[in-house]
Length: 106
Image (tube, rainbow, N blue to C red):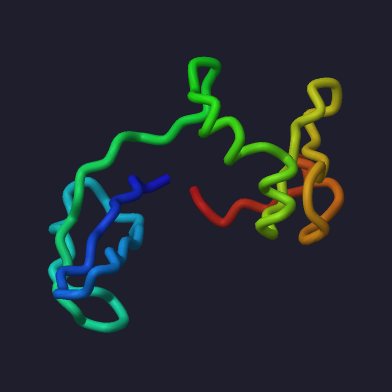
């Protein structure tokens, strides 16, 4: 899994445009937007993790209701079987079994 970096488009507009890019740690920061070629700068942000000490706002944004409302699919692991079952959304398979997944990596 690659780190996720946040970038800001540098322009004279009032609305701030942000986007995220997965990059290797040793990759040079982007200087232009990948699509529009506008100048950009990498910005520092706090990591967003949903742990037991997460804020109420973070917990609310990752709630099942909010994920469903925004079109996301969520899976939860069944500790007995090790399979993952879809609990939110209707996209993707109902069950994902790690034993049946083919890995292309080494």
